[in-house]
Every structure is written in C-alpha cells, then in structure tokens.
Image (tube, rainbow, N blue to C red; front, side, top):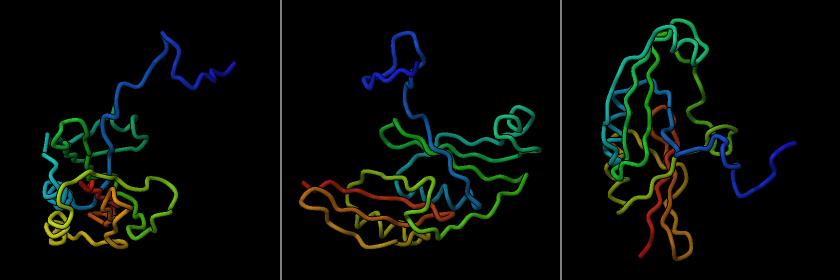
Length: 158
C-alpha cells in the first residue's frame, strides 16, 4: 500500500537532507563561469571527470567533461556547470520559450536588480520579457544567459 501521509516520510525511511546542486550543460565553460561570477556566485572548485563510473552514472560511453562548481554567497546553493568534451553534447534549443517542458529557470534573490542587469549584459545576458514590479513586493525579470539558461532575478521591495 502506498504511503499517502502528506506530512512527510515515515520514521526509518530515506529522507532528503537538502538540495545539493543543479547541473547545467554549457558549451563555453569559461563564459558560463564568468556570467555566474558576475551574478555573485563564487567558484568552489573545478575538476575533469571521466572513467567507467562516470559512464555508468550518466549512461554514456567515453565521458570526459570539465565541471565547475559555483556556490551562492550564503553557502547553501550550488550550481554545477558542465562542459562535455566526449561524447559531444547534443544541441538543444537555447531560444526555447519559457513554457517548454523540462527545467524552466533558476531564480536568485538579489539586491539592486538594475545594477546586476547592467553588469550581466556584457556577459551576453538578454532580457526575455520586461523588468516588472509585482504588486508592492518584488521587482522581477527573466533573462537568458549562457547556453540559453533562463535566469530569473527577484529583488524584494522594502
């Protein structure tokens, strides 16, 4: 019988401890690192991963990829940027609309959204729609970053 208790898992069963990271495949790792560093994430580490265990994990043969782990300033969130050398990455649609099935966007809480937009534009950031004010609580925008990644910014109004 399925556990339908909506209060969470029963004692003694596996539980989620935290969201550890989100991984995004990019075509230009250097540009992606620069973009997210300008946004305020800190480079935590870099590595090249390959070998049988990696192949089995991701169900591909001959994997060799470079990864860069970026950490949010509060230390709680991580973004893993991955550049596959082999096998080559498949092309996606970097201009897919925001209602495309699958991963939608990454949202960051920010201070001074205008300054951040000005700093990200030289790194290729493009607004998808407009910078809007939602009621009296937030200023919000969606932008497209490296590899078509949709990044949302939210500035809480004081």
